[in-house]
Image (cartoon, rainbow, N blue to C red; front, side, top):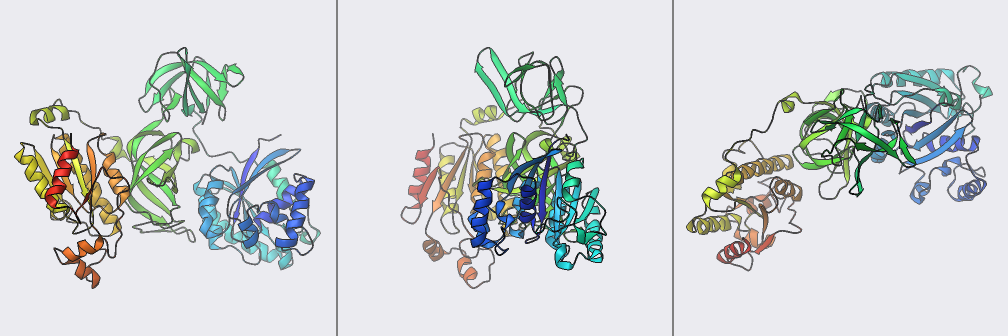
Length: 607
């Protein structure tokens, strides 16, 4: 028996994916009698086949799907024949749910791309195929469905196969078999149809039972990301994970990355005891001969075949967020078992999913595919995606909500990053702080225009200097005269504005200064990024709070009035949003408290 086949069915809306899977399950006797009765009952209310059971309802399990007649989520089903076991995912066809299709394709080895014989190859067909190719799927079946509706016209079938072949060749798909069929009647699904006598190839099931579709990965050296450090007592320390590639045996020399320290495998522990050897796909606990510092997210690899380590990459990215991607906005990145902060620093281009050409882009919208440069907060052990899916595939998460906003594939590290190392000096931050007789900090004042940030920053610095402290104020307007003079007020420019100021403030704290930052900094994500650049306790977010009406009444620069007239674009509070802190370290109500009292409160809050 051949190894199990994980396959994803994809294509546009109403191409018949759910019906085809339902037909396969039914013909392979993978549907229990009670399920058939439930489908028959549901067909009377939701079905599209009159009095006949609607087999699509075997997969469209969500009530919303049955009511709308579309697939929303990714539904996995298992069935088997005497020759092979199958795990099949019914991916949603609607463009709105392309992110769900990518989820199904990310763990599949093979794809069945459905095309409606009446409609032909559609943009969503091309989009799904490009995503499948991007995710490493190299073999597909083009299932030209609903051939009964076009009278099993061979000319129509050949035209669709030719059009799709051009798409496949441009997406990295190297093996393609076109099969005419009717999921509704079952012809050429599990049995040959008499009305397609001109077709002499295999049925869909025959082809799936015999096709060999190895997952991507040319490097078969041993690699295992550590998912969990198991230490039930002082005499046992094991490192748990699933082997991503290659094999390992007791006595093998290995190295731990990102550090690169070398050791030897002492024991391989599994659920039912111990083994001398384990291979790709096995879940094991490895015990090392020598004591080593190993954490979740580290990678254990063969000593003579080290993994790469970098903190900047070029990657392909499928954007799944409802809001567009903003260059410079901080996110969380999950790569195998490692999670860290990450930022897209550049969008190189966007891929047109219809014609395969690249287009210049400054942002990516929902379902866009782009080539990007990515920077992480720390060096990561990784592999290129075309060598190893586990070590090369990542997701981007919204830093605040934890929602998945992107799925990416590492193409290669950026050489510039590989050549950069942090230079240590003998005079440390602690030495500089001791010489100044103070604890360095960043006091980050955020609030609407006119809330009083600059006023409080000015009075606060005067008080601190009078006490003999060493300070500096970074003011939003002043910084835009020099360091950030090239930036405007778009969302992307605001993100970059805060990133630069956060880095400068961090360097000033390292120099031993008390830094007062007075910036609108309207987005929570960027303020959280700024906090993350400092050691715990060195950053204090101070919300300078005043109602919009009071800020607008003050209008010290006349900007609110101009913004109301439409003369100032992207003005915070009027035409651009402000996201107030949800849990600031200190809140100052400048609508009811004087600037002097606000300064007193800041000083009282400091150690």
